[in-house]
Image (cartoon, rainbow, N blue to C red; front, side, top):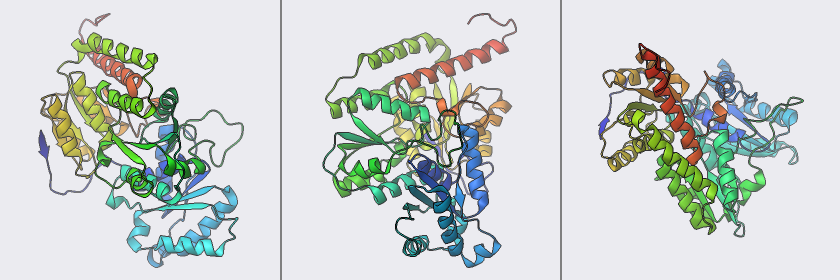
Length: 451
């Protein structure tokens, strides 16, 4: 394993997004919730732009609309007025208040302002309010996402009698992935509470009239019940050694916590299903065994196309790590694994994954896309895996880009990409193999009619 560290230079086209964006996504997955950013209107517009282009759904995000005067003297009045307005106009069940760089920099005491708001308003007028600190200079959109899940759970979860349910914190996955997790849990006879659940709020059907707050999401009652869960499953390599919503539930309510890698590929999916067999006392249904068998068969069918191919994988730490594990599993060498985050956990995780297969790969934290482009020179790669922001690199290098994760803003259907489980792995495998075949077929001087 080769790990490269770089001196600080200015970021150019970052391989990450802002922390409030991640928090906003969590609040979009809670029933009746509205996101309120304490900062400038530009922050909310930026986040809405990414969500609308990726999920292809309209949504509202409120903001306290900082001006030059507010930036100097503080945003207390704007926050109080804004909260009153959204309570009146939207009638939310919960308001998720996330801070931006500007409000954090000037030092607004947001918890104190929220207490003042509660005291000044009638009790039946004020919904639940969850506050999360999300300055982007202290983390990425993934940090904001996990911080918001933690804030929601620590604010709303309560002590309950033990329930036959499992709480799942999936991380930043697609609506299709969330629907898949629901199906799996149901097939194992386990009630589940998935937080956040934006499988309907950000991938719903046609509306007959505009919904100010989209239907769907994890209910406040379900979140409160997490304190009585049989166990909590948290997906993500980067969470293993951190304080998370799962560690809070374990310490406060003695709920058993299970930390798993995102189940992409046969090995990681097997670990997920083995855990569910243990928790439920049931064997895996035949339909999943058959899907696994089909996947193994497809690995054999596609081996001649994939063996020793070289790939670059970039994006969120958790997704990159699981994708790298899957690529090594099918004989592909992920010669460069890159992320814009600085967690310190990325290197050891990738080191462990690569050692399983006796491979040497380069791992880089804190890279922007210009640096990724520079690292790609001389690697002689065959394809790239990641979000849309890396497309210009793939185009420049004349290699396919297999789009996964977030954001995907130059294709339709990003919200319906299934990454997880045997079925998601099957779809991903087929996409990668066909991308390689298409490239080779297109570059052939005779244009083979079959490969």
